[in-house]
Image: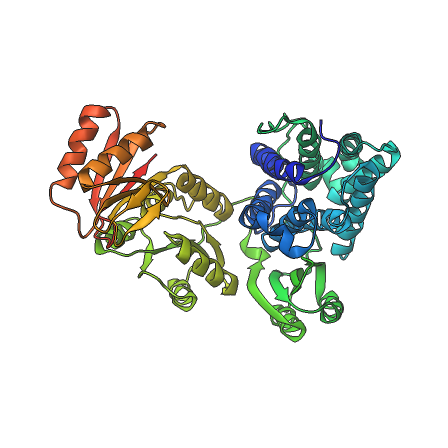
Length: 534
Protein backbone atom coordinates (compact mmCIF):
# COMPACT_ATOMS: atom_id res chain seq x y z
CA UNK A 1 0.00 0.00 0.00
CA UNK A 2 1.35 3.44 -0.91
CA UNK A 3 1.72 5.84 1.99
CA UNK A 4 1.89 9.09 0.08
CA UNK A 5 -0.34 10.75 -2.48
CA UNK A 6 2.02 10.84 -5.45
CA UNK A 7 1.43 11.24 -9.17
CA UNK A 8 0.76 7.50 -9.50
CA UNK A 9 -2.11 7.73 -7.02
CA UNK A 10 -3.48 10.84 -8.73
CA UNK A 11 -3.54 9.07 -12.09
CA UNK A 12 -5.15 5.96 -10.61
CA UNK A 13 -7.70 8.07 -8.78
CA UNK A 14 -8.61 10.03 -11.89
CA UNK A 15 -9.21 6.89 -13.93
CA UNK A 16 -10.93 4.93 -11.17
CA UNK A 17 -13.13 7.87 -10.18
CA UNK A 18 -14.30 8.41 -13.74
CA UNK A 19 -14.90 4.68 -14.14
CA UNK A 20 -17.01 4.61 -10.96
CA UNK A 21 -19.07 7.60 -12.05
CA UNK A 22 -19.72 6.05 -15.45
CA UNK A 23 -20.77 2.77 -13.84
CA UNK A 24 -23.22 4.59 -11.55
CA UNK A 25 -24.25 7.36 -13.95
CA UNK A 26 -27.84 6.19 -14.39
CA UNK A 27 -28.24 5.54 -10.67
CA UNK A 28 -27.09 9.08 -9.84
CA UNK A 29 -29.26 10.57 -12.59
CA UNK A 30 -32.28 8.87 -11.06
CA UNK A 31 -31.40 10.17 -7.61
CA UNK A 32 -31.49 13.68 -8.97
CA UNK A 33 -34.67 15.39 -7.86
CA UNK A 34 -33.56 18.57 -9.61
CA UNK A 35 -33.66 17.92 -13.38
CA UNK A 36 -31.58 20.64 -15.03
CA UNK A 37 -31.37 21.85 -18.61
CA UNK A 38 -27.79 20.70 -19.15
CA UNK A 39 -28.33 17.13 -17.99
CA UNK A 40 -28.75 15.25 -14.72
CA UNK A 41 -26.16 15.07 -11.97
CA UNK A 42 -24.68 11.71 -12.96
CA UNK A 43 -24.22 12.85 -16.53
CA UNK A 44 -22.86 16.20 -15.37
CA UNK A 45 -20.26 14.55 -13.16
CA UNK A 46 -19.17 12.13 -15.87
CA UNK A 47 -18.71 14.95 -18.34
CA UNK A 48 -16.86 17.09 -15.79
CA UNK A 49 -14.46 14.28 -14.81
CA UNK A 50 -13.99 13.30 -18.46
CA UNK A 51 -12.78 16.84 -19.15
CA UNK A 52 -10.45 16.61 -16.14
CA UNK A 53 -9.08 13.27 -17.33
CA UNK A 54 -8.43 14.64 -20.81
CA UNK A 55 -6.53 17.60 -19.36
CA UNK A 56 -4.41 15.25 -17.28
CA UNK A 57 -3.62 13.00 -20.23
CA UNK A 58 -2.66 15.86 -22.53
CA UNK A 59 -0.11 17.60 -20.31
CA UNK A 60 1.06 15.27 -17.57
CA UNK A 61 4.74 15.33 -18.48
CA UNK A 62 5.29 19.09 -18.23
CA UNK A 63 5.53 19.44 -14.44
CA UNK A 64 9.16 20.57 -14.60
CA UNK A 65 8.10 23.67 -16.53
CA UNK A 66 5.62 24.70 -13.82
CA UNK A 67 7.96 24.36 -10.85
CA UNK A 68 5.38 22.24 -9.03
CA UNK A 69 5.74 18.73 -7.73
CA UNK A 70 4.61 16.03 -10.13
CA UNK A 71 1.50 15.26 -8.10
CA UNK A 72 0.77 18.99 -7.70
CA UNK A 73 0.99 19.52 -11.43
CA UNK A 74 -1.32 16.57 -12.03
CA UNK A 75 -3.87 17.84 -9.51
CA UNK A 76 -3.81 21.32 -11.08
CA UNK A 77 -4.41 19.78 -14.50
CA UNK A 78 -7.39 17.86 -13.15
CA UNK A 79 -8.78 20.97 -11.47
CA UNK A 80 -8.45 23.17 -14.55
CA UNK A 81 -9.84 20.50 -16.86
CA UNK A 82 -12.79 19.97 -14.52
CA UNK A 83 -13.52 23.69 -14.36
CA UNK A 84 -13.42 24.21 -18.12
CA UNK A 85 -15.60 21.14 -18.63
CA UNK A 86 -17.84 21.59 -15.58
CA UNK A 87 -21.53 20.81 -16.11
CA UNK A 88 -24.18 21.96 -13.66
CA UNK A 89 -23.68 23.04 -10.08
CA UNK A 90 -22.42 19.62 -9.02
CA UNK A 91 -19.72 19.66 -11.70
CA UNK A 92 -18.61 23.15 -10.71
CA UNK A 93 -18.44 22.14 -7.04
CA UNK A 94 -16.37 19.05 -7.82
CA UNK A 95 -14.00 21.22 -9.85
CA UNK A 96 -13.51 23.35 -6.76
CA UNK A 97 -12.86 20.28 -4.64
CA UNK A 98 -10.05 19.41 -7.03
CA UNK A 99 -8.78 22.97 -6.97
CA UNK A 100 -8.69 23.00 -3.16
CA UNK A 101 -6.71 19.77 -3.13
CA UNK A 102 -4.35 21.07 -5.81
CA UNK A 103 -3.68 24.40 -4.09
CA UNK A 104 -3.01 22.70 -0.75
CA UNK A 105 -0.88 19.79 -1.92
CA UNK A 106 1.01 21.22 -4.91
CA UNK A 107 4.14 22.18 -2.99
CA UNK A 108 4.12 19.38 -0.40
CA UNK A 109 7.04 17.04 -1.26
CA UNK A 110 5.48 13.95 0.38
CA UNK A 111 1.78 14.03 1.16
CA UNK A 112 0.98 12.38 4.50
CA UNK A 113 -2.21 12.03 6.49
CA UNK A 114 -2.29 15.53 8.06
CA UNK A 115 -1.64 17.11 4.66
CA UNK A 116 -4.62 15.32 3.11
CA UNK A 117 -6.85 16.28 6.03
CA UNK A 118 -5.88 19.95 5.65
CA UNK A 119 -6.39 19.75 1.89
CA UNK A 120 -9.91 18.38 2.32
CA UNK A 121 -10.65 21.28 4.66
CA UNK A 122 -9.36 23.70 1.99
CA UNK A 123 -11.43 21.92 -0.66
CA UNK A 124 -14.52 22.34 1.52
CA UNK A 125 -13.87 26.05 1.90
CA UNK A 126 -13.38 26.44 -1.85
CA UNK A 127 -16.59 24.57 -2.62
CA UNK A 128 -18.67 26.60 -0.14
CA UNK A 129 -17.17 29.84 -1.47
CA UNK A 130 -18.21 28.87 -4.99
CA UNK A 131 -21.90 28.80 -4.11
CA UNK A 132 -23.64 32.08 -3.42
CA UNK A 133 -26.22 30.48 -1.10
CA UNK A 134 -24.95 27.13 0.23
CA UNK A 135 -27.63 24.60 1.13
CA UNK A 136 -27.15 21.82 3.68
CA UNK A 137 -28.20 18.33 2.68
CA UNK A 138 -26.27 18.60 -0.58
CA UNK A 139 -22.81 17.62 -1.77
CA UNK A 140 -21.47 20.47 0.37
CA UNK A 141 -22.63 18.74 3.57
CA UNK A 142 -21.10 15.46 2.46
CA UNK A 143 -17.82 17.15 1.63
CA UNK A 144 -17.72 18.97 4.95
CA UNK A 145 -18.32 15.70 6.81
CA UNK A 146 -15.52 14.05 4.85
CA UNK A 147 -13.13 16.81 5.90
CA UNK A 148 -14.24 16.45 9.53
CA UNK A 149 -13.72 12.69 9.38
CA UNK A 150 -10.26 13.14 7.93
CA UNK A 151 -9.31 15.56 10.71
CA UNK A 152 -10.66 13.27 13.42
CA UNK A 153 -8.60 10.35 12.10
CA UNK A 154 -5.46 11.93 13.53
CA UNK A 155 -3.29 9.55 11.54
CA UNK A 156 -0.03 10.11 9.77
CA UNK A 157 -0.94 7.50 7.18
CA UNK A 158 -2.55 9.14 4.17
CA UNK A 159 -4.50 6.02 3.17
CA UNK A 160 -6.08 5.81 6.64
CA UNK A 161 -7.10 9.46 6.46
CA UNK A 162 -8.62 8.91 3.03
CA UNK A 163 -10.60 5.95 4.38
CA UNK A 164 -11.83 7.97 7.35
CA UNK A 165 -12.99 10.71 4.99
CA UNK A 166 -14.79 8.19 2.78
CA UNK A 167 -16.57 6.57 5.71
CA UNK A 168 -17.64 9.92 7.18
CA UNK A 169 -18.96 11.00 3.77
CA UNK A 170 -21.07 7.84 3.51
CA UNK A 171 -22.66 8.53 6.90
CA UNK A 172 -23.33 12.16 5.91
CA UNK A 173 -24.87 11.06 2.62
CA UNK A 174 -27.39 8.88 4.46
CA UNK A 175 -28.38 11.93 6.55
CA UNK A 176 -29.03 14.27 3.62
CA UNK A 177 -32.81 13.49 3.51
CA UNK A 178 -33.03 14.72 7.12
CA UNK A 179 -31.47 18.02 6.07
CA UNK A 180 -33.30 18.70 2.82
CA UNK A 181 -37.09 18.13 2.75
CA UNK A 182 -37.27 17.62 -1.01
CA UNK A 183 -34.97 14.60 -0.64
CA UNK A 184 -37.10 13.17 2.14
CA UNK A 185 -40.25 13.57 0.05
CA UNK A 186 -38.63 11.79 -2.88
CA UNK A 187 -37.11 9.08 -0.68
CA UNK A 188 -33.57 9.55 -2.02
CA UNK A 189 -30.19 10.86 -0.94
CA UNK A 190 -28.40 13.78 -2.56
CA UNK A 191 -27.15 12.93 -6.05
CA UNK A 192 -24.07 15.14 -5.95
CA UNK A 193 -23.15 13.73 -2.55
CA UNK A 194 -23.43 10.22 -3.95
CA UNK A 195 -21.03 11.15 -6.72
CA UNK A 196 -18.55 12.58 -4.21
CA UNK A 197 -18.73 9.37 -2.17
CA UNK A 198 -17.83 7.37 -5.26
CA UNK A 199 -14.81 9.61 -5.85
CA UNK A 200 -13.65 9.25 -2.25
CA UNK A 201 -14.10 5.46 -2.42
CA UNK A 202 -12.00 5.46 -5.58
CA UNK A 203 -9.29 7.48 -3.80
CA UNK A 204 -9.12 4.90 -1.01
CA UNK A 205 -8.78 2.07 -3.50
CA UNK A 206 -6.12 3.96 -5.44
CA UNK A 207 -3.72 3.78 -2.51
CA UNK A 208 -3.93 -0.01 -2.28
CA UNK A 209 -4.13 -0.99 -5.97
CA UNK A 210 -1.15 -2.90 -7.30
CA UNK A 211 0.84 -1.14 -10.05
CA UNK A 212 -0.86 -1.47 -13.40
CA UNK A 213 -4.17 -2.69 -11.98
CA UNK A 214 -7.49 -1.13 -12.84
CA UNK A 215 -9.48 -0.08 -9.81
CA UNK A 216 -12.96 -1.59 -10.03
CA UNK A 217 -15.84 0.81 -9.39
CA UNK A 218 -17.52 0.33 -6.01
CA UNK A 219 -20.83 -1.55 -6.04
CA UNK A 220 -24.03 0.47 -5.68
CA UNK A 221 -24.71 1.18 -2.02
CA UNK A 222 -27.79 3.36 -2.25
CA UNK A 223 -31.23 2.05 -3.21
CA UNK A 224 -32.65 3.94 -6.16
CA UNK A 225 -36.13 5.38 -6.06
CA UNK A 226 -37.50 7.31 -9.01
CA UNK A 227 -37.82 10.88 -7.72
CA UNK A 228 -40.62 13.31 -8.13
CA UNK A 229 -39.42 15.96 -10.55
CA UNK A 230 -38.58 19.49 -9.52
CA UNK A 231 -38.17 22.30 -12.03
CA UNK A 232 -34.50 23.12 -11.59
CA UNK A 233 -31.39 22.15 -9.68
CA UNK A 234 -31.26 25.21 -7.41
CA UNK A 235 -32.90 28.57 -6.95
CA UNK A 236 -36.41 29.94 -6.90
CA UNK A 237 -39.03 29.89 -9.61
CA UNK A 238 -38.83 33.69 -9.97
CA UNK A 239 -36.10 33.58 -12.62
CA UNK A 240 -36.71 32.29 -16.13
CA UNK A 241 -33.23 31.83 -17.57
CA UNK A 242 -30.00 30.03 -16.75
CA UNK A 243 -26.90 31.88 -18.00
CA UNK A 244 -23.44 30.26 -18.02
CA UNK A 245 -20.15 31.31 -19.55
CA UNK A 246 -16.41 31.10 -19.16
CA UNK A 247 -14.73 34.39 -18.36
CA UNK A 248 -11.16 35.63 -18.76
CA UNK A 249 -10.82 38.28 -16.06
CA UNK A 250 -8.70 39.44 -13.12
CA UNK A 251 -9.70 38.83 -9.50
CA UNK A 252 -10.75 42.42 -8.78
CA UNK A 253 -13.09 42.51 -11.77
CA UNK A 254 -14.66 39.23 -10.72
CA UNK A 255 -15.43 40.61 -7.26
CA UNK A 256 -17.43 43.38 -8.95
CA UNK A 257 -19.06 40.83 -11.24
CA UNK A 258 -20.28 38.79 -8.27
CA UNK A 259 -21.94 41.88 -6.79
CA UNK A 260 -23.55 42.79 -10.11
CA UNK A 261 -24.91 39.32 -10.79
CA UNK A 262 -26.05 38.93 -7.18
CA UNK A 263 -28.42 41.83 -7.79
CA UNK A 264 -29.82 40.27 -10.96
CA UNK A 265 -30.83 36.79 -9.83
CA UNK A 266 -29.98 33.73 -7.74
CA UNK A 267 -28.09 30.39 -7.93
CA UNK A 268 -24.94 32.42 -8.48
CA UNK A 269 -21.73 30.40 -8.81
CA UNK A 270 -18.46 32.05 -9.88
CA UNK A 271 -15.35 29.88 -9.62
CA UNK A 272 -11.83 30.21 -10.98
CA UNK A 273 -9.30 27.74 -12.29
CA UNK A 274 -6.31 29.28 -10.55
CA UNK A 275 -3.11 29.93 -12.48
CA UNK A 276 -2.46 32.60 -15.08
CA UNK A 277 -4.34 33.79 -16.92
CA UNK A 278 -7.37 33.26 -14.65
CA UNK A 279 -10.38 31.54 -16.23
CA UNK A 280 -13.71 31.68 -14.39
CA UNK A 281 -16.86 29.61 -14.74
CA UNK A 282 -19.96 31.79 -14.23
CA UNK A 283 -23.44 30.39 -13.54
CA UNK A 284 -26.56 32.39 -12.58
CA UNK A 285 -30.37 32.31 -12.89
CA UNK A 286 -31.83 35.63 -14.09
CA UNK A 287 -34.65 37.29 -15.97
CA UNK A 288 -32.45 39.87 -17.72
CA UNK A 289 -30.10 37.77 -19.87
CA UNK A 290 -28.55 40.78 -21.55
CA UNK A 291 -27.58 42.37 -18.25
CA UNK A 292 -25.97 39.13 -17.05
CA UNK A 293 -23.85 38.87 -20.17
CA UNK A 294 -23.05 42.58 -20.19
CA UNK A 295 -21.74 42.25 -16.64
CA UNK A 296 -19.34 39.64 -17.95
CA UNK A 297 -18.23 41.93 -20.78
CA UNK A 298 -17.50 44.68 -18.26
CA UNK A 299 -15.48 42.27 -16.13
CA UNK A 300 -13.43 40.71 -18.92
CA UNK A 301 -13.89 38.45 -21.94
CA UNK A 302 -16.85 36.05 -21.69
CA UNK A 303 -16.90 33.08 -24.06
CA UNK A 304 -18.66 29.74 -24.51
CA UNK A 305 -21.87 31.53 -23.48
CA UNK A 306 -24.92 29.34 -22.85
CA UNK A 307 -28.47 30.60 -22.21
CA UNK A 308 -31.33 28.24 -21.39
CA UNK A 309 -34.99 29.12 -20.79
CA UNK A 310 -36.39 26.93 -18.02
CA UNK A 311 -39.85 26.94 -19.59
CA UNK A 312 -38.42 24.97 -22.51
CA UNK A 313 -37.18 22.23 -20.17
CA UNK A 314 -40.03 20.33 -18.46
CA UNK A 315 -38.84 18.39 -15.46
CA UNK A 316 -37.00 15.19 -16.35
CA UNK A 317 -38.54 15.06 -19.80
CA UNK A 318 -36.61 15.23 -23.03
CA UNK A 319 -38.09 17.85 -25.31
CA UNK A 320 -37.90 17.77 -29.06
CA UNK A 321 -35.01 20.00 -30.05
CA UNK A 322 -33.17 20.66 -33.25
CA UNK A 323 -29.78 18.98 -33.22
CA UNK A 324 -27.18 18.72 -35.98
CA UNK A 325 -23.80 17.16 -36.55
CA UNK A 326 -21.18 19.23 -38.36
CA UNK A 327 -18.50 17.10 -39.99
CA UNK A 328 -15.25 18.05 -41.70
CA UNK A 329 -14.74 16.05 -44.90
CA UNK A 330 -12.05 15.92 -47.58
CA UNK A 331 -13.43 13.96 -50.52
CA UNK A 332 -16.71 13.96 -52.47
CA UNK A 333 -17.56 10.39 -51.49
CA UNK A 334 -17.01 11.13 -47.81
CA UNK A 335 -19.17 14.23 -48.05
CA UNK A 336 -21.96 12.21 -49.67
CA UNK A 337 -21.77 9.56 -46.94
CA UNK A 338 -22.02 12.16 -44.19
CA UNK A 339 -24.87 14.01 -45.89
CA UNK A 340 -26.63 10.65 -46.14
CA UNK A 341 -26.33 10.45 -42.35
CA UNK A 342 -28.06 13.86 -42.12
CA UNK A 343 -24.87 15.72 -41.21
CA UNK A 344 -23.72 19.18 -42.28
CA UNK A 345 -20.42 19.00 -44.15
CA UNK A 346 -17.66 21.60 -44.26
CA UNK A 347 -14.54 21.33 -46.38
CA UNK A 348 -11.05 20.26 -45.34
CA UNK A 349 -8.85 22.31 -43.03
CA UNK A 350 -11.56 24.75 -41.92
CA UNK A 351 -10.94 27.80 -39.76
CA UNK A 352 -12.84 28.38 -36.51
CA UNK A 353 -14.75 31.14 -38.29
CA UNK A 354 -15.92 28.71 -40.99
CA UNK A 355 -17.17 26.32 -38.34
CA UNK A 356 -18.94 29.15 -36.51
CA UNK A 357 -20.65 30.12 -39.76
CA UNK A 358 -21.79 26.52 -40.31
CA UNK A 359 -23.14 26.34 -36.76
CA UNK A 360 -24.97 29.64 -37.15
CA UNK A 361 -26.40 28.72 -40.54
CA UNK A 362 -27.79 25.45 -39.15
CA UNK A 363 -30.08 27.31 -36.77
CA UNK A 364 -29.79 24.37 -34.38
CA UNK A 365 -29.92 24.62 -30.60
CA UNK A 366 -27.52 21.71 -30.18
CA UNK A 367 -24.47 20.95 -32.34
CA UNK A 368 -21.95 18.12 -32.38
CA UNK A 369 -18.64 18.78 -34.14
CA UNK A 370 -16.72 15.82 -35.60
CA UNK A 371 -13.27 16.93 -36.80
CA UNK A 372 -11.81 13.72 -38.36
CA UNK A 373 -8.16 14.49 -37.57
CA UNK A 374 -5.98 15.85 -34.79
CA UNK A 375 -5.28 19.24 -36.32
CA UNK A 376 -8.93 19.97 -37.07
CA UNK A 377 -9.86 18.82 -33.59
CA UNK A 378 -8.02 21.81 -32.12
CA UNK A 379 -9.88 24.12 -34.52
CA UNK A 380 -13.21 22.54 -33.56
CA UNK A 381 -12.50 23.03 -29.86
CA UNK A 382 -11.55 26.66 -30.45
CA UNK A 383 -14.76 27.24 -32.41
CA UNK A 384 -16.89 25.56 -29.73
CA UNK A 385 -15.48 27.90 -27.10
CA UNK A 386 -16.58 30.94 -29.07
CA UNK A 387 -20.17 29.87 -29.76
CA UNK A 388 -22.81 32.14 -28.27
CA UNK A 389 -26.20 30.51 -27.93
CA UNK A 390 -26.31 26.89 -29.11
CA UNK A 391 -24.85 24.07 -27.05
CA UNK A 392 -21.81 22.68 -28.86
CA UNK A 393 -19.74 19.58 -28.10
CA UNK A 394 -16.76 18.13 -29.92
CA UNK A 395 -16.52 14.38 -30.43
CA UNK A 396 -12.76 14.07 -31.09
CA UNK A 397 -12.79 11.72 -34.08
CA UNK A 398 -9.38 11.20 -35.66
CA UNK A 399 -10.46 9.35 -38.81
CA UNK A 400 -13.46 9.42 -41.15
CA UNK A 401 -14.27 5.82 -40.19
CA UNK A 402 -14.62 6.89 -36.56
CA UNK A 403 -17.02 9.63 -37.66
CA UNK A 404 -19.16 7.09 -39.52
CA UNK A 405 -19.25 4.95 -36.37
CA UNK A 406 -20.32 7.96 -34.30
CA UNK A 407 -23.03 9.03 -36.74
CA UNK A 408 -24.42 5.49 -36.84
CA UNK A 409 -25.41 5.63 -33.16
CA UNK A 410 -26.70 9.20 -33.16
CA UNK A 411 -30.19 9.44 -31.69
CA UNK A 412 -31.97 12.78 -31.40
CA UNK A 413 -34.49 11.21 -29.00
CA UNK A 414 -31.74 10.99 -26.38
CA UNK A 415 -30.67 13.90 -24.24
CA UNK A 416 -27.87 15.89 -25.82
CA UNK A 417 -25.21 14.88 -23.32
CA UNK A 418 -26.20 11.22 -23.53
CA UNK A 419 -26.05 11.40 -27.31
CA UNK A 420 -22.58 12.98 -27.27
CA UNK A 421 -21.33 10.31 -24.88
CA UNK A 422 -22.76 7.52 -27.05
CA UNK A 423 -21.16 8.99 -30.17
CA UNK A 424 -17.81 9.43 -28.44
CA UNK A 425 -17.88 5.86 -27.14
CA UNK A 426 -18.74 4.49 -30.60
CA UNK A 427 -15.93 6.50 -32.17
CA UNK A 428 -13.47 5.39 -29.51
CA UNK A 429 -14.40 1.75 -30.02
CA UNK A 430 -13.62 1.96 -33.74
CA UNK A 431 -9.97 1.02 -34.41
CA UNK A 432 -8.63 2.60 -37.56
CA UNK A 433 -5.79 2.34 -40.05
CA UNK A 434 -4.57 4.09 -43.20
CA UNK A 435 -2.64 3.10 -46.30
CA UNK A 436 -0.64 5.67 -48.24
CA UNK A 437 2.58 6.21 -50.20
CA UNK A 438 5.70 7.67 -48.63
CA UNK A 439 6.55 11.05 -50.09
CA UNK A 440 10.21 10.95 -48.99
CA UNK A 441 12.78 8.84 -47.20
CA UNK A 442 12.34 8.80 -43.44
CA UNK A 443 12.94 6.76 -40.31
CA UNK A 444 9.64 5.50 -38.88
CA UNK A 445 8.50 3.29 -36.00
CA UNK A 446 8.51 0.39 -38.48
CA UNK A 447 11.95 1.14 -39.86
CA UNK A 448 13.32 3.23 -42.71
CA UNK A 449 11.06 3.94 -45.66
CA UNK A 450 11.88 5.37 -49.08
CA UNK A 451 9.86 7.62 -51.33
CA UNK A 452 7.13 5.61 -53.04
CA UNK A 453 6.97 2.84 -50.42
CA UNK A 454 3.51 1.71 -49.31
CA UNK A 455 2.96 2.66 -45.68
CA UNK A 456 0.45 1.15 -43.28
CA UNK A 457 -0.47 3.32 -40.31
CA UNK A 458 -2.45 2.12 -37.29
CA UNK A 459 -4.07 4.94 -35.35
CA UNK A 460 -1.59 7.45 -36.71
CA UNK A 461 1.67 5.52 -36.30
CA UNK A 462 3.53 3.80 -39.14
CA UNK A 463 3.24 0.08 -38.39
CA UNK A 464 4.15 -1.48 -41.74
CA UNK A 465 6.31 -0.72 -44.79
CA UNK A 466 5.81 -2.54 -48.08
CA UNK A 467 5.78 -2.11 -51.81
CA UNK A 468 2.16 -2.84 -52.80
CA UNK A 469 -0.94 -1.14 -51.43
CA UNK A 470 -2.94 -4.38 -51.52
CA UNK A 471 -0.31 -6.29 -49.58
CA UNK A 472 -0.10 -3.62 -46.90
CA UNK A 473 -3.89 -3.36 -46.71
CA UNK A 474 -4.37 -7.09 -46.13
CA UNK A 475 -1.74 -7.19 -43.39
CA UNK A 476 -3.37 -4.22 -41.66
CA UNK A 477 -6.74 -5.97 -41.79
CA UNK A 478 -5.27 -9.08 -40.22
CA UNK A 479 -3.61 -7.09 -37.45
CA UNK A 480 -6.75 -5.16 -36.59
CA UNK A 481 -9.06 -8.18 -36.77
CA UNK A 482 -6.62 -10.21 -34.71
CA UNK A 483 -7.80 -8.13 -31.77
CA UNK A 484 -11.45 -8.90 -32.51
CA UNK A 485 -14.09 -7.22 -34.64
CA UNK A 486 -17.39 -7.84 -36.38
CA UNK A 487 -17.65 -4.99 -38.89
CA UNK A 488 -15.01 -3.70 -41.30
CA UNK A 489 -15.43 -0.38 -43.11
CA UNK A 490 -13.25 0.30 -46.16
CA UNK A 491 -13.04 3.82 -47.59
CA UNK A 492 -11.27 3.98 -50.96
CA UNK A 493 -9.45 7.16 -51.89
CA UNK A 494 -9.07 9.10 -55.10
CA UNK A 495 -5.82 7.26 -55.94
CA UNK A 496 -6.99 3.76 -55.05
CA UNK A 497 -6.12 1.26 -57.82
CA UNK A 498 -9.08 -0.51 -59.40
CA UNK A 499 -8.07 -3.93 -58.10
CA UNK A 500 -7.71 -2.89 -54.45
CA UNK A 501 -11.32 -3.37 -53.34
CA UNK A 502 -11.92 -6.83 -54.88
CA UNK A 503 -8.57 -8.06 -53.54
CA UNK A 504 -9.37 -6.94 -50.00
CA UNK A 505 -12.89 -8.36 -50.13
CA UNK A 506 -11.54 -11.72 -51.36
CA UNK A 507 -9.02 -11.76 -48.52
CA UNK A 508 -11.70 -11.02 -45.91
CA UNK A 509 -14.01 -13.70 -47.30
CA UNK A 510 -11.25 -16.32 -47.16
CA UNK A 511 -9.54 -15.35 -43.88
CA UNK A 512 -12.37 -13.74 -41.91
CA UNK A 513 -15.63 -15.23 -43.26
CA UNK A 514 -17.79 -14.16 -40.31
CA UNK A 515 -16.84 -10.49 -40.52
CA UNK A 516 -19.22 -8.08 -42.27
CA UNK A 517 -17.42 -5.79 -44.75
CA UNK A 518 -18.69 -2.51 -46.16
CA UNK A 519 -16.83 -0.61 -48.86
CA UNK A 520 -17.38 2.96 -50.03
CA UNK A 521 -15.79 5.35 -52.51
CA UNK A 522 -14.58 8.12 -50.20
CA UNK A 523 -12.58 10.02 -52.80
CA UNK A 524 -10.16 11.30 -50.15
CA UNK A 525 -6.70 12.48 -51.26
CA UNK A 526 -3.39 11.15 -49.89
CA UNK A 527 -4.84 7.92 -48.48
CA UNK A 528 -5.92 5.33 -51.08
CA UNK A 529 -7.40 3.26 -48.24
CA UNK A 530 -8.90 3.94 -44.83
CA UNK A 531 -9.90 1.02 -42.62
CA UNK A 532 -12.21 0.89 -39.62
CA UNK A 533 -12.87 -2.14 -37.41
CA UNK A 534 -15.70 -2.29 -34.88
